[in-house]
Image 1 (tube, one colour):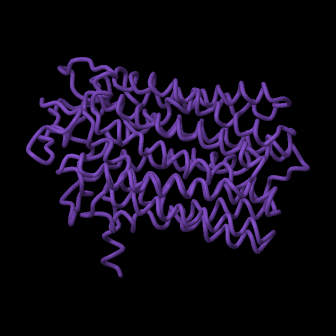
Image 2: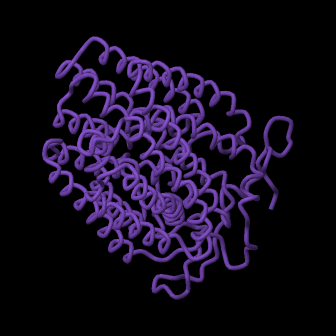
Image 3: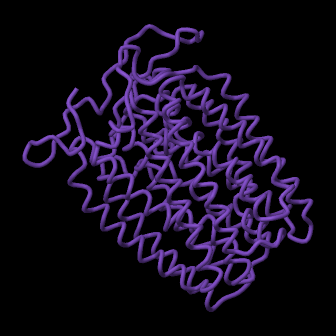
Length: 460
């Protein structure tokens, strides 16, 4: 047992741990708000569920636009500066949420927050990928999912104990608490080097170069489906469904949020060890099947159970769903980085983040209206979509370059460098180095069956 626990040590550089600590604090704030955002809009401010779903979707729409700007800026000025600016924009937006009294105000503030969120994810992912050695990226992104979900779990538990729909002041406190965590993350980022992707001799890239990678585009489309029919629906629509259809109490909803995030926090690193050496796309297909099963359970609980009994079934469902999220955390983002060209890493991450934003745009917008009119019809529908996405994942596997189909298996780590081999630090940073970047995994020849170059790739 001791040997197994030691094997879970991610062996990551100090800078990665610092970044994860800032993310932990920030996600605590997101966990405070996450399970109660639609409940706040509907039950406190009197906005209908359908419109509330559109309001949440407007956040994703704004993020979709700003994400591409954030990705390009991450390649030009460095991801740390972009991430800091995104955090400040979101802090301002959330600080004003207690002032919402009408739908247009909610739309406006969600667009502000979405503008920051869109640049947050590509810059944060680019910074993490740039600080991590290539053979540890799957562990770094998995640990990111673990620490973020730990923060969300604690935040949801705290929010469940504080939030009361008959006391709007409790929500004001939660929004201000969330705002403070964004500012904490900004301070933590000052401890990190301002890395830049690629090197000084790389030619400037364009988003058209990313779009020509057809394998990557197909992979992003797969993620849109999984996010829109999976994570977005479970995260945004289960809390109002549980409260308004199954009559689950506010504290119990906070516990459900805690259970979901806590399972990810506890299971993420063990799942990483399980997927090492196994095919990535098969892992994503298994995830889709697991999610479909949880949606069937939600349907059954909402139809035949109420209150505590329904909450128990929902708790089991979100726990199983969270294990599936662990598969996503260990597989999706690391493969994005492996498919990317180093000089375009920020742009690749922006495209990747757009899949989350599109999924979060479609899922709550369409699902909110279904929830309003036919709440029990929503869950079987998304279960079927997840099963179709699993089949798509298996079909896509043959187009993934052969060297990238398996999650890297690391038996031991003989020393961990402080920076990723393919990053170049800015010379004005006290931690900068003149060391030349090492080859990126994507520099290896990408061949598929028949010895032809995989679609959308270029030889360099």
